[in-house]
Length: 211
Image 1 (cartoon, rainbow, N blue to C red):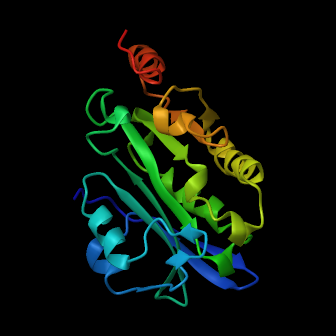
Image 2 (cartoon, rainbow, N blue to C red):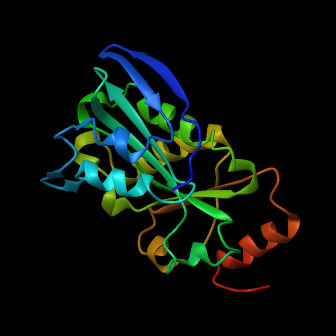
């Protein structure tokens, strides 16, 4: 685990004030309660269903676990910026050059309160962000379409609107998982300090090739 200073903003919503806090440490997460809506629903399963999953993520090097906390102790939303798993295509591009928005979720009650936007904002204050290619992969089979009352295409557009203001752009790729459904999406943000050579390598990697 790499120790970075936490940053925090307060978000006022009609449902009450939230603390949006980055680089939450395992021992801090352990003191918080995890909303029961992060679980398994009829047509949807949360990305993380247990608080312990966030604790384990927070132990990984350079990882930022961002939490939306209500009533001082209650987790109602989370985002995770972390390195990809070693077996993934995106880990091949020079050690630790790419970082994934590994998870972003807000419980059903707190949606439409701009909580997800605040989570992304705090993930992007990572001190290494300009030296990285941050990316997000959206798989339609993981989306809570029932809870949001959206079609897959509507949800896709919502994700684009969420990430674009933070410098993310949609990129084409032949990654098999992304290509399984037309609604799936791959977006990335290339940091200002990423070299031209690395940018070119990223272009080739999106199609499973080496320059």
